[in-house]
Length: 256
Ligand code: PGA
Image (cartoon, protein in one colour):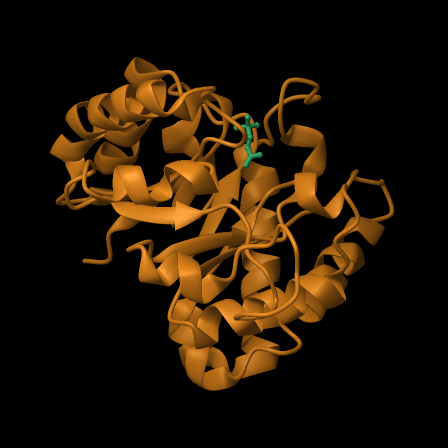
């Protein structure tokens, strides 16, 4: 059985290292008991990665961004090699909040290639800004996926996870969470594009997650009816009780 995946994207939270340790420890208690069915990956801010690497037991650890280079004159950047070196195994790339800060598909593609070469697993976010009645959002989605993967050699495909994150469903200002039917349409569509790019067998092994206003009430539906292989959780990943419940729901849903 392939485990489901639940990614905790802490974004730029919490404000102190001390709090980060508390959140990490409580996450291990609340979500760790479902580890036979769910792989939990905690993605804190860069500064807490090293500190948390010894505090999260068998859970995965990931960064929320990385540079497209491994070393060099890039003031303020953090390279994938550095992230791998301190014990993190994953990196979220192409998140809409970073695309909103100016990251293009081309830059994301360079980061994806650099991260894969350094040994990191990639959680690549794609998602349309809005859903138009004519279905143009599907071409936006495929352009983003193809563009972001343009530089990834096929031999690194095993390192890839795709997260479908419609921008209109993310964060405090979200319209609403996607419906499971929206997610099913997107997961099927993304799989189809990946099949076209890489062939059916390698593409079928790439997990597709859903992210955007996930909570304990809607979590199971995205897995059961939405066809997602897991979830990327923002706000609710810092509310430990809810995050534990989300993980429990995913573990239950994985029995179907
Ligand atoms: P949200 O964020 O769960 O707070 O909507 C999801 C994300 O940005 O990855």
